[in-house]
Amino acid sequence: MYNDLRQTTFVNLPRGEQRVAFHHLTWNAYQEILQVLNHHPRNLRLAYDHGILEMTMPLEEHESTNRWIERLICILVVEMGLKIKTMGSTTLNFPHLEKSAEPDSCYYIQNQPKVAGKKVDLTRDPPPDLVIEVDVTHSDINKLHLYASMGIPEFWRYQAPTWQIYQLQGQQYVEVEASPTFPWLEKVRFYQFLVQCETDEVAAEKAFRAWVQKFSFLARLP
Image 1 (cartoon, rainbow, N blue to C red):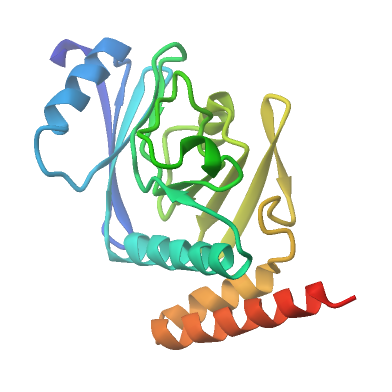
Image 2: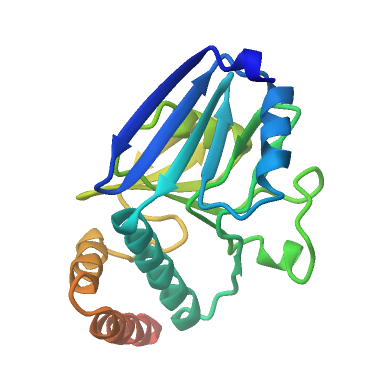
């Protein structure tokens, strides 16, 4: 296994996250590493694609932003009367593709009824409907190619201060201006929520929830 660790790239930028990338690593070697790591508590997120294994250790800025975005999504789901299965950073393994990822967050929303109350099996069940990645530093893996090949319908990438929304069309992502899941969520509202969370998370949630409730009410008017 360790003979495959021929080239290693270290990124140590403590502002948001720390990354280390191993190149020319076989799928079997990655699976061995994954099994070892899964037997120990860890604050690492892994992604594997085309022989590259990237390990990310999120720091405060990364984790805070990810939690704020998750809170925003949960507010939208509740107030819009939708359903959700939250998968967090669950390992998404696709052995036949030799691809794997542990996203910052992922969710079943449209396909929630298909996976409700069960352990997801990606050999039979659909992939998550929405994947979130917060990238503070550079990634060695092309996340657009990775998640598109997994068939993830919608991918959000937040690289401060920019929120990018991608919709799977055919076999590749196309950047769109509005979320297919939450089409009336304005980008300005998204940014306002994150900015307010920096100083007062409770006030940010109250203000955003009130806005969603008002918008939902107006949308139901004849």
